[in-house]
Length: 213
Image 1 (spheres, rainbow, N blue to C red):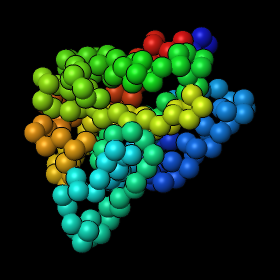
Image 2 (image 1 turned 90 degrees about the vertical axis):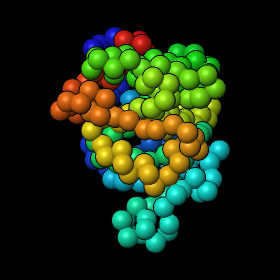
Image 3 (image 1 turned 60 degrees about the horizontal axis):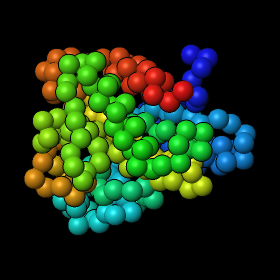
Image 4 (image 1 turned 45 degrees about the vertical axis):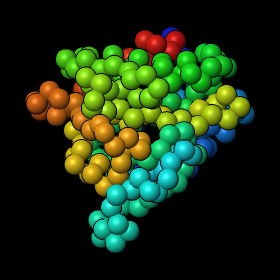
């Protein structure tokens, strides 16, 4: 789409630390005017990340168990608490210069939520927001998408993690986002049908293209 206000890249399955390094380089290039805002889609091997508001007290699994499973823990500079990425989860990094859209982080978070709500609606799932919480929920109880961003000089990094076909049982290693009284779900789990990851990726990209123009 020629009128889209951002570029798009799909990195496939990529190590979290490698992706973080690439994010930071893109953000710097945007700051210097070398490139436009960029939406990145990818997947990560299983990794636990801890945001600025998080604590390793919300990691339930022992260090020995994580080491045995080959799962490492990455403290990072996004907002939010503890979350988990694994294959089959659509991770989106909207590395955007908000000056080109709206210099308002609250608006940006709600915009991401809106794009995700529209995405999952394509598959017959009604998503919504919960007062005081960030992310997208199903029936107010099951979190289908976590969101956490970092912003410097109105350029954002990090983004969202939408559960598609991933193994949500792995979330038992943590207390997702520090919320112990709710569960995690995926698109495939909610639809009880075989889901094509590429279809979800395309629907999500289309939602972002419609919203940010």
